[in-house]
Length: 77
Image 1 (cartoon, helix red, strand yellow):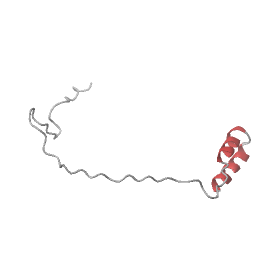
Image 2 (spheres, one colour):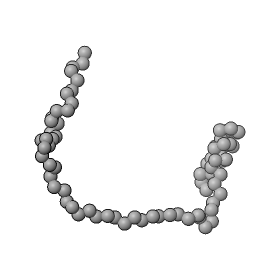
Image 3 (cartoon, rainbow, N blue to C red):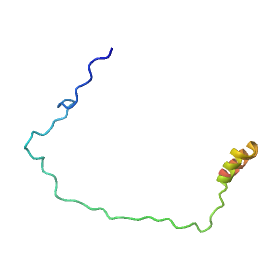
Image 4 (tube, rainbow, N blue to C red):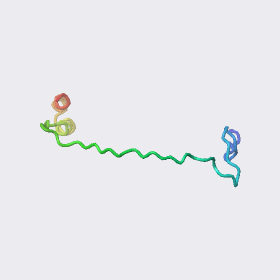
């Protein structure tokens, strides 16, 4: 059938581990903190009536041709 499964946990695949007891290399001590920017969106000045939910309901539960037309016109707005 299939060969033996690959052996995991070894130091293969080009990765080198740190020997036990030795510290990691020094990291830079400077940390730059980015300012936090909050972007909020207020309500629209002139909201557009969206009949997408009604057209999907009409498409699925009522008349299929009328629902397709309603869906096309609600997406076009």
